[in-house]
Structure formats: structure tokens, C-alpha cells
Image (cartoon, rainbow, N blue to C red; front, side, top):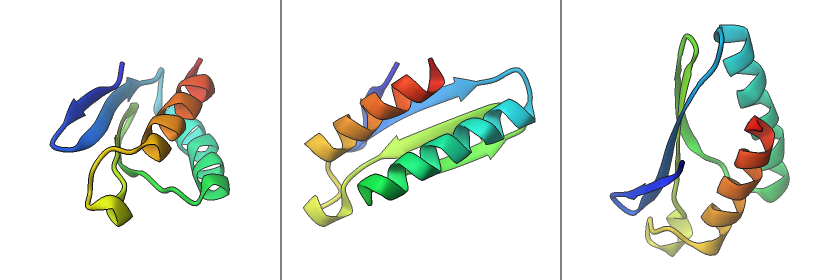
Length: 77
């Protein structure tokens, strides 16, 4: 589940392998591009961490971050 840390929404994801993690990141990238709202993320093998914050709002969590988090949740289900 998403947690709020340091003015960011943060969530860690674990997949069966690197290919599944990368496929998930590709789906997120396409959705984020459509929203013009891009996450910070890291990927190591089958683990992906995503952090969402809105830079234009002073690096705080906004409704745009919550909308993208909800969309990401649908992509992982």
C-alpha cells in the first residue's frame, strides 16, 4: 500500500522476476506520460519503488499524485 513519507507517496512492489518488473514499469511509464506526471522510481531485479510528489506545488503530495497512485494500483492488479 501507498504510504506518505517526506511529502511523497511511496510504494514498493515485488514481482516474480525482472521481466515482470520491467513490464510493469513500462505500463506505468505510458500512463504517467499521458497524465504528464512522472514518478521517481528505482528498480533492482524484481523490486520497484515508486515515489510521487508534485514539484510545481513545492514538492508536496497533491491530487495529481493520488490519481496517479490509484492508476498505478490498477496496473499492478
